[in-house]
Image 1 (spheres, rainbow, N blue to C red):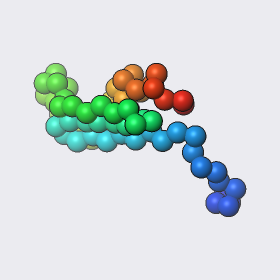
Image 2: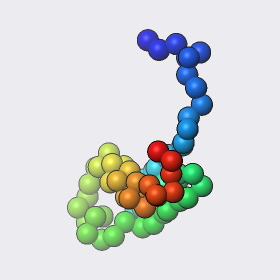
Image 3: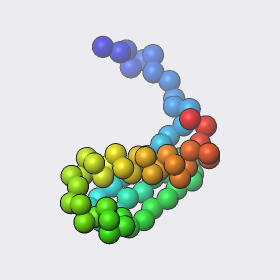
Length: 68
């Protein structure tokens, strides 16, 4: 197990969240949020799939602002 005392502060914080109606993310004070388009919401995807989709969209939308 990792020793917590050896952990350091992160270089960057990247956050995302999704729900059945929309999604959003933030990285280095750059953010996006929005309603899911009908072609996504009509698929009745599981929340884990929506969370993963949100990560991909967020990286595409914010990657050039982050120092990841």
